[in-house]
Image 1 (cartoon, rainbow, N blue to C red):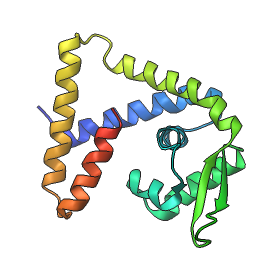
Image 2 (cartoon, helix red, strand yellow; image 1 turned 90 degrees about the horizontal axis):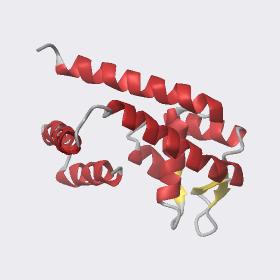
Image 3 (spheres, rainbow, N blue to C red; image 1 turned 60 degrees about the horizontal axis):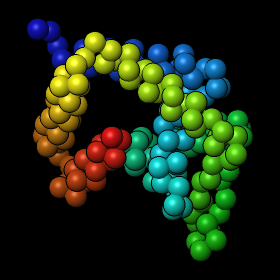
Length: 159
């Protein structure tokens, strides 16, 4: 059967490579598209770099680099929080908002490629299996229950 971890890694690489190739037309990467989608999904509240780092489970410095490149591309504005100057709020620019529909279409297309020959039942089973794999790995981690619940909620938000 082979090593599942290696297969999952190869699938992830192929998926990201395909997404990055499609998103080249928009001048953004998969990581940047994910930030755009998160920002759109949480448009009703202030979003900080810390929240983004936690949502994507990356180091603060990694997220800082992603955000800086997005600011340079005029996709984001970073402004001090008026209530607490220690924090900075992140906002989408009009340019970013204009890319969102196209970026979502690329993601939907890539996801349709992944499940191209699946029946509706197979798609549903695949989703359930992915959740089960994720849940098993999460439950075997040394994280607190509160951290596990938070990560699981984030996983479910992406539906």
